[in-house]
Image (cartoon, rainbow, N blue to C red; front, side, top):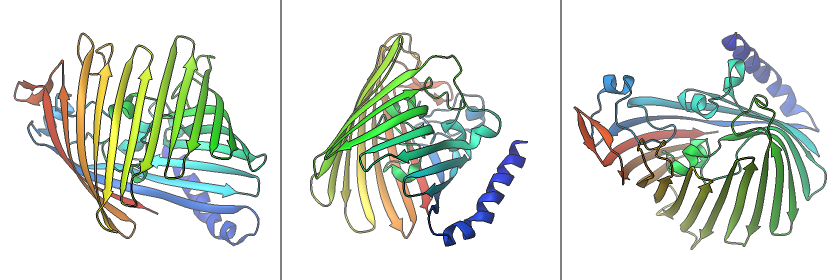
Amino acid sequence: MKNFLTHCLLAVLLAYTPSLLAQEGPKFTLSGSADTYFRANINASNDPEAFILGSSAAPATSFANLPGFSLGMFNLIGGVEGEKVGVVGDLVFGPRGEDAVFLSTGSANIVNQLYAYWNVSENVKFTLGNFNTFLGYEVISPASNFNYSTSYMFSYGPFSHTGLKVDITAGDVTIMGAILNPTDATDYNLTGDYVFGLQLGYDFGKGSAYANGIFQEGFYQLDLTAGYDITDAIYLGLNTTIADETFSGVAVYLQAALSETFKLGARAESFTDKTGSILGSETESKVFGFTISANYTIDNLTIIPEIRIDSLSDGKFDLGDTDLGDSLSSFILAAVYSF
């Protein structure tokens, strides 16, 4: 049934694309990305059988953790935009997509985003439906991240929300308020509870900063993201978050454009697991992650070689052959195509 619905949806998109593109009025757009990668541990076992049994060493973060030559996802985004209203459908296929929509079931487990919006005025916009989270520095699509692997803060924060939000723009300041289903309950409200979301943003010319928050009974998460163009070629980013009594962290991103086609960047992250459940410890534990990535662009294709080192303060990585260690080094070579 799932494959039948998927084929029907793709057939409709392909059938109506030429006519919609030719029409005046509402404009149809189609975009997306595809990614694939190779991953290997440097100081640990790469035994695929160990991975299947759940003991292969990998960082406890999302998406880029499969061994050997592996698939990411195919992302297809269709939108119809009118003068004041529009709709967006965002479909994902592959392991990364499945992980991104992990609480969805049936045919909905390929829906990454599905929302309608209304531009009430130049300064006020309402959005209703399922949309990716406004918290955090990183996003689900690798086409919009510099590093291919993801941070701990991103991995354990929300991926998506379903609800109603309003965005208000006042000069360089933006304000967003939302009422949402429980985090990652994207198909429908599972419990009857609701989450409130807030965002305050400021654009200061060479950069911007956003203070974000989600609040519900018994839980909150506060988050700050910021970015600044130090020069035309050097960029500095920041993300820090605290999720009630669950986790907290801070990450710094530094990127430099060495030419029109080649960039080099690093991410340094300190993450605290307050309960020990995330990092596999019986008490509060910390991990420091350092990732260095290159981005080499050929037309719409970006090749990303990456080295990542994760170090635990309490707890051990399973390095294979019964060996345990507090540090894990790994290598990734990814290809990301955007269209």
